[in-house]
Amino acid sequence: MTNHQDPASLLSRRRLLGLGASAGSSLLLGGCALNGLSEQVGQISEPLNQRLEALLQGRGPVPEFRPDQVDPEALLINSFNGTPRLDPGSYRLRVEGLVNRPLQLDLAALAALPQQSVTMRHVCVEGWAAIVTWSGVRLADVLNLAEISPLGGYVEIESADQYFESWDRASAIHPQTLLATAMNRAPLPVANGAPVRLATPIKLGYKLSKWVTRLRVVSSLGVRRGTWEDQGYEWFAGL
Ligand SMILES: Nc1nc2c(c(=O)[nH]1)N[C@H]1C(S)=C(S)[C@@H](COP(=O)(O)O)O[C@H]1N2
Ligand SMILES: [Mo]
Image (cartoon, rainbow, N blue to C red; front, side):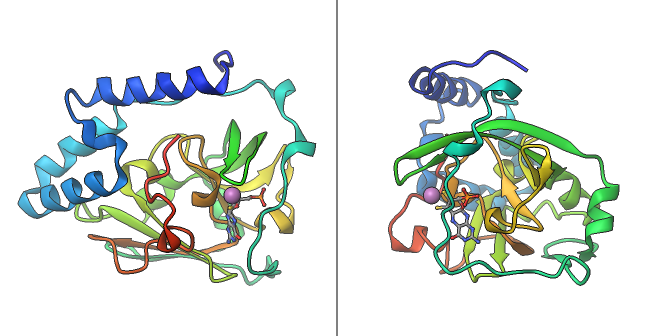
């Protein structure tokens, strides 16, 4: 746990770190440019792709907040297509696409994986933010379990309310990116995405899909990039 900084300095610090880690690649700041580069590199060769990934991950973990900074009242509900109620007993997280071992994980299987927490600021572009503790499994652990292919540069995320997202691989396997099943040390409420939602301190709120049902690893982005992205929101949406 490191100390909290005000959001503006935190943002600029992260930007600097990102730039510093990638030695001259200002492409990091633009989702589209990054996407283009990553696609090109993926086509050239696998070792290069892995080097790029290492560079992107070079920033390492970002600072977290203290437990006493958590503000449950500040977290608003933002759902745009109703609140799906998934039956915990029949719930399966499907992991498919460019993986050697496609998976269908039930909640017991997820609970059996190492559990992590992240205390972070959730930032919604609609003008609110809230410090939250999310707990669950690392998305990286699930992707590793599925034996993600080196060619899988992106992860598409489907939700039960038809919400759609797509992420770059480096952000997906970032150590603070979780498939959360708990919020503020209590079981994840339905309104906040139960039984499983995405959480990470490195992306804006709209990237953090609730009610996640399916992960599909792909080599390039499709026509659909995200529920909000397809209406003009930035794709990378990094914090
Ligand atoms: N499936 C799904 N995920 C979603 C959304 C949604 O409408 N459906 N809204 C997004 C937006 S814009 C935000 S800010 C956060 C809000 O999360 P919360 O409702 O738990 O605060 O969820 C994100 N994930
Ligand atoms: Mo949002």
